[in-house]
Length: 528
Image 1: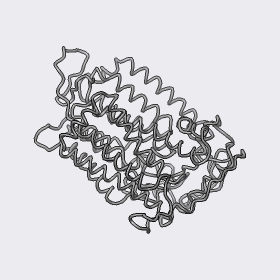
Image 2: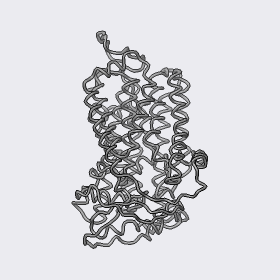
Image 3: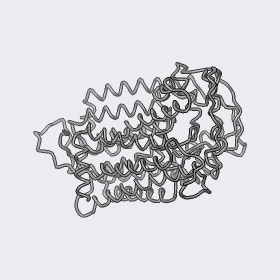
Image 4: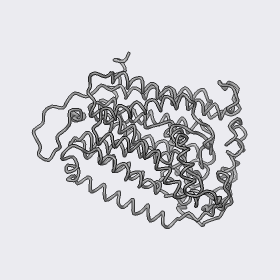
């Protein structure tokens, strides 16, 4: 059975293009299933992102500031929103989730109808200050189809973007000689929360997927140098960086953090010199520099003028203490906290995912060199301390608003770093690596399916309903059985790339003074 799956995996990866198409189809099926099977506006602030995307597609990149009263996390305030001109039914989007969000026992069947009034009116969105690039990429379907169908198509557009980024990351990992381990890192980084946000209209999805691509490309450049693949990897790094930086100002911080940690791992002599001599590096650096300047200019021209009445007792020290105490909650949110953060993944998902991550990190510490172990420990510390510092610095202005997914574009570096250290340093014999990869990949797939089913059940019958929602109060288009089946098949098929056989060592090449000396586990043959 395993040998047959390995042959199937090798056939799917016969060329990078074929593997990319297979990976893209599977990732899109997973993210698209979340798109189709989740109630409209059922994810965090999705109504605001729908409105922002639809307005951007109509050329309304900016708009007048409108102060709107809101209560967020128990804190009252006047929030600065942006006024745009859209069909009147868009005004009903903010109300669609209110009857069941934070009331997990209620199914989504109570959501009101959107209506069909096409009269143009002013609608406000809290996402009006965000960079328009993501919204231009996802809002165009609203010009083709009106009403709920257009909203679902906007979700699919977001899923297309995220799936392309994830497929590129998987192909990059498959270029390693010990590619089954490297591919496992991509699967571990693509948590259920990653796929969920990728299927929603929310910039977090593209941000996280771009973070996975950036980390995979950077780690491949520094830990598995190959002159024949360098330009290709620099292009993937550039594309991922452009998406990451053009979504939110935090993207620049996550990109810089990935560069710092990957430079810490660059131990082979001549690797950096080889990279710096490539014209492609400077071309992509120029593009990233322009994107960074544009993103910073946009942020400076669109400040957040919200007036939030934070309690006097919420000092920086208090916020830091609370955030540190919430560290485990933030980790669980990075793995899977769905809906409006009111639908946690089942315990099975967290146990499996945390078990795989802990195993990979422990093996990296065991086999990595001193500098690599420092990098892994530094990542673990950063995952805990970055939210503490960020929340403490902003608590008095905006309150306790941190969510685990905010850090995920950076935190995905932990499993990727761990597997690539193992692939580069660990001996091939003496440890059942193939068995580890196979069991881990299957476990992650089952944990992913459990999250999807558990969330869909919550929307269908509520958390107090039957474990098998045979009499669902709410059902997605096509029915819940169809989407659970589709998701299960795609998740299990995604295990196949993790069973790729390792590449044979490359044929001896003439010595190159400018090329770094490859390590024992880092050489790969030229791809077909």
